[in-house]
Picture 1 (cartoon, one colour):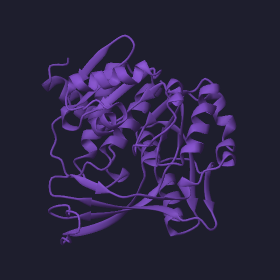
Picture 2: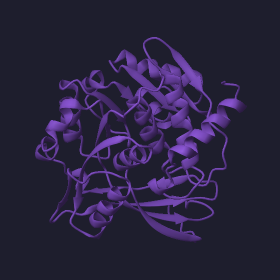
Picture 3: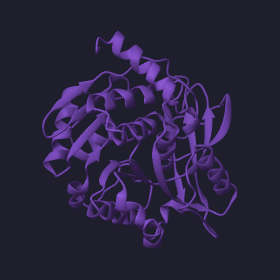
Length: 314
Protein backbone atom coordinates (compact mmCIF):
# COMPACT_ATOMS: atom_id res chain seq x y z
CA UNK A 1 0.00 0.00 0.00
CA UNK A 2 0.99 3.64 -0.40
CA UNK A 3 2.86 4.83 2.74
CA UNK A 4 0.91 7.22 4.95
CA UNK A 5 2.37 10.64 5.70
CA UNK A 6 4.95 10.86 8.51
CA UNK A 7 6.26 14.07 10.08
CA UNK A 8 9.66 14.29 11.78
CA UNK A 9 10.96 17.15 13.91
CA UNK A 10 14.57 16.95 12.83
CA UNK A 11 17.84 17.16 14.68
CA UNK A 12 20.86 17.36 12.41
CA UNK A 13 24.56 17.67 13.15
CA UNK A 14 27.79 17.07 11.31
CA UNK A 15 29.30 13.88 12.73
CA UNK A 16 33.06 13.52 13.09
CA UNK A 17 33.77 9.78 13.34
CA UNK A 18 37.07 8.94 15.09
CA UNK A 19 37.93 5.25 14.72
CA UNK A 20 40.45 3.58 17.04
CA UNK A 21 41.16 0.41 18.95
CA UNK A 22 39.52 1.76 22.08
CA UNK A 23 37.75 4.79 23.51
CA UNK A 24 39.96 6.79 25.91
CA UNK A 25 39.30 6.80 29.64
CA UNK A 26 38.78 10.07 31.48
CA UNK A 27 41.92 12.22 31.22
CA UNK A 28 43.55 9.86 28.71
CA UNK A 29 44.69 10.50 25.14
CA UNK A 30 44.78 7.64 22.62
CA UNK A 31 45.82 7.48 18.97
CA UNK A 32 43.09 6.83 16.41
CA UNK A 33 43.37 4.86 13.18
CA UNK A 34 41.33 7.10 10.85
CA UNK A 35 38.40 9.53 10.75
CA UNK A 36 35.66 10.72 8.41
CA UNK A 37 32.75 13.17 8.51
CA UNK A 38 29.08 12.60 7.68
CA UNK A 39 25.71 14.15 8.44
CA UNK A 40 23.77 12.67 11.36
CA UNK A 41 21.37 13.49 14.18
CA UNK A 42 18.62 11.27 15.54
CA UNK A 43 15.67 13.20 14.17
CA UNK A 44 17.03 13.55 10.65
CA UNK A 45 18.29 9.95 10.77
CA UNK A 46 14.71 8.76 11.42
CA UNK A 47 13.48 10.78 8.44
CA UNK A 48 16.28 9.74 6.07
CA UNK A 49 16.11 6.04 6.98
CA UNK A 50 12.35 6.04 6.49
CA UNK A 51 12.59 7.87 3.18
CA UNK A 52 15.31 5.52 1.88
CA UNK A 53 12.87 2.65 2.46
CA UNK A 54 10.19 4.47 0.46
CA UNK A 55 8.41 6.35 3.23
CA UNK A 56 6.38 9.54 2.75
CA UNK A 57 8.20 11.87 5.14
CA UNK A 58 7.77 15.57 5.91
CA UNK A 59 10.91 16.86 7.62
CA UNK A 60 10.84 19.97 9.81
CA UNK A 61 14.47 20.99 10.25
CA UNK A 62 16.41 24.04 11.45
CA UNK A 63 20.03 24.54 10.36
CA UNK A 64 22.69 27.18 10.49
CA UNK A 65 23.46 29.11 7.33
CA UNK A 66 26.90 27.54 7.05
CA UNK A 67 28.77 24.74 5.34
CA UNK A 68 27.11 22.12 7.56
CA UNK A 69 23.66 23.44 6.68
CA UNK A 70 24.41 23.39 2.96
CA UNK A 71 25.68 19.82 3.23
CA UNK A 72 22.54 18.81 5.11
CA UNK A 73 20.28 20.19 2.39
CA UNK A 74 22.18 18.25 -0.28
CA UNK A 75 21.94 15.06 1.78
CA UNK A 76 18.22 15.47 2.45
CA UNK A 77 17.55 15.93 -1.27
CA UNK A 78 19.71 12.87 -2.03
CA UNK A 79 17.56 10.77 0.33
CA UNK A 80 14.34 11.97 -1.29
CA UNK A 81 13.27 14.48 1.37
CA UNK A 82 11.55 17.76 0.53
CA UNK A 83 13.23 20.96 1.71
CA UNK A 84 9.89 22.79 2.11
CA UNK A 85 10.25 23.03 5.90
CA UNK A 86 14.04 23.05 6.14
CA UNK A 87 15.32 26.47 7.28
CA UNK A 88 18.88 27.78 7.21
CA UNK A 89 19.13 30.61 9.76
CA UNK A 90 21.70 33.41 9.68
CA UNK A 91 23.70 33.63 12.90
CA UNK A 92 22.95 30.03 13.92
CA UNK A 93 25.42 27.15 13.74
CA UNK A 94 24.54 23.73 12.40
CA UNK A 95 24.97 21.06 15.09
CA UNK A 96 28.16 19.04 15.52
CA UNK A 97 28.99 15.69 17.13
CA UNK A 98 32.37 14.00 17.67
CA UNK A 99 31.84 10.21 17.76
CA UNK A 100 34.55 7.85 19.01
CA UNK A 101 34.26 4.21 17.95
CA UNK A 102 36.34 1.30 19.23
CA UNK A 103 37.33 -1.92 17.44
CA UNK A 104 34.16 -3.68 18.68
CA UNK A 105 31.84 -1.02 17.28
CA UNK A 106 31.06 0.59 20.64
CA UNK A 107 30.83 4.37 20.71
CA UNK A 108 30.92 7.49 22.85
CA UNK A 109 29.20 10.63 21.54
CA UNK A 110 28.99 14.30 22.52
CA UNK A 111 26.43 16.46 20.70
CA UNK A 112 26.38 20.23 20.20
CA UNK A 113 22.78 20.86 19.05
CA UNK A 114 23.30 24.19 17.34
CA UNK A 115 20.28 25.42 15.38
CA UNK A 116 18.05 22.44 16.11
CA UNK A 117 18.26 23.32 19.81
CA UNK A 118 16.54 26.64 19.09
CA UNK A 119 13.23 25.75 17.46
CA UNK A 120 10.42 28.30 17.84
CA UNK A 121 6.64 28.02 17.51
CA UNK A 122 6.99 29.70 14.12
CA UNK A 123 9.23 26.85 12.92
CA UNK A 124 6.61 24.28 13.93
CA UNK A 125 3.57 26.25 12.78
CA UNK A 126 4.99 26.73 9.27
CA UNK A 127 4.16 23.05 8.74
CA UNK A 128 0.76 23.25 10.42
CA UNK A 129 -1.22 22.05 7.40
CA UNK A 130 0.93 18.93 7.16
CA UNK A 131 -0.44 17.76 10.51
CA UNK A 132 -4.00 17.82 9.12
CA UNK A 133 -3.62 14.54 7.20
CA UNK A 134 -0.50 12.97 8.76
CA UNK A 135 -0.54 9.46 10.18
CA UNK A 136 2.32 9.80 12.66
CA UNK A 137 4.88 12.32 13.92
CA UNK A 138 8.25 11.30 15.36
CA UNK A 139 10.32 13.15 17.94
CA UNK A 140 13.59 12.93 19.86
CA UNK A 141 15.05 14.90 22.77
CA UNK A 142 17.98 16.35 20.81
CA UNK A 143 15.66 19.26 19.96
CA UNK A 144 14.80 21.91 22.56
CA UNK A 145 12.31 20.47 25.02
CA UNK A 146 9.75 23.29 25.07
CA UNK A 147 9.17 23.15 21.33
CA UNK A 148 9.33 19.34 21.26
CA UNK A 149 6.49 19.29 23.78
CA UNK A 150 4.63 21.96 21.77
CA UNK A 151 4.89 19.89 18.57
CA UNK A 152 3.89 16.66 20.35
CA UNK A 153 0.75 18.31 21.68
CA UNK A 154 -0.04 19.79 18.26
CA UNK A 155 0.18 16.33 16.71
CA UNK A 156 -1.97 14.81 19.45
CA UNK A 157 -4.65 17.49 19.11
CA UNK A 158 -4.82 16.80 15.37
CA UNK A 159 -5.23 13.04 15.98
CA UNK A 160 -1.75 12.26 14.68
CA UNK A 161 -0.04 9.29 16.34
CA UNK A 162 3.05 10.33 18.33
CA UNK A 163 6.31 8.33 18.30
CA UNK A 164 9.02 9.36 20.79
CA UNK A 165 12.60 8.13 20.79
CA UNK A 166 13.44 9.61 24.23
CA UNK A 167 17.14 10.17 23.63
CA UNK A 168 19.25 11.68 25.02
CA UNK A 169 17.76 11.03 28.45
CA UNK A 170 15.99 14.22 29.47
CA UNK A 171 13.99 15.29 32.49
CA UNK A 172 10.55 16.24 31.19
CA UNK A 173 7.04 16.77 32.53
CA UNK A 174 5.49 13.31 33.11
CA UNK A 175 2.16 14.80 32.03
CA UNK A 176 3.52 14.30 28.50
CA UNK A 177 3.31 10.50 28.69
CA UNK A 178 -0.42 10.23 27.82
CA UNK A 179 0.23 12.09 24.56
CA UNK A 180 2.54 9.31 23.35
CA UNK A 181 1.29 6.54 21.09
CA UNK A 182 4.74 4.92 21.06
CA UNK A 183 7.89 5.26 23.14
CA UNK A 184 11.10 3.53 22.01
CA UNK A 185 13.95 3.70 24.53
CA UNK A 186 16.93 1.40 24.54
CA UNK A 187 17.80 -0.57 27.66
CA UNK A 188 19.97 2.20 29.15
CA UNK A 189 17.34 4.88 28.60
CA UNK A 190 14.56 2.67 29.92
CA UNK A 191 16.58 2.06 33.08
CA UNK A 192 17.13 5.76 33.69
CA UNK A 193 13.52 6.76 33.03
CA UNK A 194 11.86 4.00 35.03
CA UNK A 195 14.37 3.16 37.77
CA UNK A 196 14.08 -0.50 36.73
CA UNK A 197 17.44 -2.00 35.78
CA UNK A 198 16.80 -3.31 32.28
CA UNK A 199 19.15 -6.15 31.43
CA UNK A 200 16.94 -8.80 29.78
CA UNK A 201 13.51 -9.50 28.31
CA UNK A 202 11.78 -9.77 31.68
CA UNK A 203 13.07 -6.47 33.07
CA UNK A 204 12.36 -4.76 29.73
CA UNK A 205 8.76 -5.95 29.96
CA UNK A 206 8.50 -4.49 33.47
CA UNK A 207 9.86 -1.17 32.22
CA UNK A 208 7.37 -1.23 29.38
CA UNK A 209 4.51 -1.76 31.82
CA UNK A 210 5.85 1.21 33.83
CA UNK A 211 5.47 3.43 30.75
CA UNK A 212 1.98 2.14 29.99
CA UNK A 213 0.91 2.75 33.60
CA UNK A 214 1.74 6.42 33.05
CA UNK A 215 -0.41 6.75 29.97
CA UNK A 216 1.82 5.72 27.05
CA UNK A 217 -0.19 3.59 24.62
CA UNK A 218 2.63 1.25 23.49
CA UNK A 219 6.30 0.70 24.31
CA UNK A 220 9.07 -0.90 22.28
CA UNK A 221 12.31 -1.38 24.19
CA UNK A 222 15.45 -2.31 22.28
CA UNK A 223 18.16 -4.44 23.87
CA UNK A 224 21.00 -4.32 21.35
CA UNK A 225 22.12 -7.75 20.20
CA UNK A 226 19.53 -9.40 22.51
CA UNK A 227 16.66 -8.01 20.44
CA UNK A 228 13.63 -6.09 21.65
CA UNK A 229 10.45 -6.30 23.70
CA UNK A 230 7.05 -5.05 22.54
CA UNK A 231 4.58 -4.00 25.22
CA UNK A 232 1.00 -3.05 24.34
CA UNK A 233 -2.22 -3.09 26.40
CA UNK A 234 -2.97 -6.53 24.93
CA UNK A 235 0.36 -8.32 24.78
CA UNK A 236 4.01 -8.56 25.74
CA UNK A 237 6.20 -10.11 23.08
CA UNK A 238 9.95 -10.67 22.78
CA UNK A 239 11.92 -10.60 19.54
CA UNK A 240 15.46 -11.84 18.89
CA UNK A 241 17.85 -9.77 16.82
CA UNK A 242 19.60 -10.98 13.67
CA UNK A 243 23.22 -12.00 14.21
CA UNK A 244 25.56 -9.80 12.19
CA UNK A 245 29.20 -8.74 12.26
CA UNK A 246 29.12 -5.41 14.07
CA UNK A 247 31.27 -2.57 12.78
CA UNK A 248 29.53 0.51 14.22
CA UNK A 249 26.35 0.71 16.31
CA UNK A 250 26.08 4.52 16.20
CA UNK A 251 23.03 4.77 13.94
CA UNK A 252 21.49 1.32 14.39
CA UNK A 253 18.86 2.51 16.86
CA UNK A 254 17.91 5.50 14.71
CA UNK A 255 17.48 3.33 11.62
CA UNK A 256 15.48 0.81 13.69
CA UNK A 257 13.14 3.69 14.59
CA UNK A 258 12.91 4.98 11.01
CA UNK A 259 12.20 1.49 9.68
CA UNK A 260 9.59 0.83 12.38
CA UNK A 261 7.61 3.99 11.66
CA UNK A 262 7.84 3.18 7.94
CA UNK A 263 6.43 -0.29 8.65
CA UNK A 264 3.56 1.20 10.64
CA UNK A 265 2.84 3.66 7.82
CA UNK A 266 2.20 0.77 5.39
CA UNK A 267 0.12 -1.12 7.99
CA UNK A 268 2.59 -3.95 8.42
CA UNK A 269 1.43 -6.30 11.22
CA UNK A 270 3.12 -5.39 14.51
CA UNK A 271 5.21 -8.57 14.78
CA UNK A 272 6.43 -8.13 11.22
CA UNK A 273 7.10 -4.41 11.80
CA UNK A 274 9.40 -5.16 14.75
CA UNK A 275 11.30 -7.85 12.85
CA UNK A 276 11.58 -5.55 9.81
CA UNK A 277 12.99 -2.76 11.99
CA UNK A 278 15.38 -5.19 13.70
CA UNK A 279 16.79 -6.27 10.35
CA UNK A 280 17.19 -2.67 9.19
CA UNK A 281 19.01 -1.74 12.40
CA UNK A 282 21.23 -4.83 12.24
CA UNK A 283 22.27 -4.12 8.65
CA UNK A 284 23.17 -0.56 9.63
CA UNK A 285 25.52 -1.87 12.33
CA UNK A 286 27.53 -3.77 9.72
CA UNK A 287 28.86 -0.50 8.24
CA UNK A 288 30.63 2.52 9.70
CA UNK A 289 28.92 5.89 9.62
CA UNK A 290 25.58 7.55 10.16
CA UNK A 291 22.58 7.47 7.84
CA UNK A 292 24.69 6.54 4.79
CA UNK A 293 24.88 3.10 6.39
CA UNK A 294 21.06 2.78 6.35
CA UNK A 295 19.89 -0.12 4.14
CA UNK A 296 17.55 -0.08 1.15
CA UNK A 297 14.36 -2.10 0.99
CA UNK A 298 15.83 -5.03 -0.95
CA UNK A 299 18.57 -5.53 1.64
CA UNK A 300 16.09 -5.49 4.53
CA UNK A 301 13.70 -7.88 2.82
CA UNK A 302 16.51 -10.33 2.07
CA UNK A 303 17.82 -10.37 5.64
CA UNK A 304 14.27 -10.55 7.01
CA UNK A 305 13.49 -13.64 4.94
CA UNK A 306 16.77 -15.30 5.95
CA UNK A 307 16.32 -14.37 9.61
CA UNK A 308 12.74 -15.64 9.82
CA UNK A 309 13.77 -18.93 8.25
CA UNK A 310 16.82 -19.45 10.48
CA UNK A 311 14.93 -18.47 13.64
CA UNK A 312 11.98 -20.72 12.81
CA UNK A 313 9.62 -17.77 12.53
CA UNK A 314 8.02 -19.03 9.30
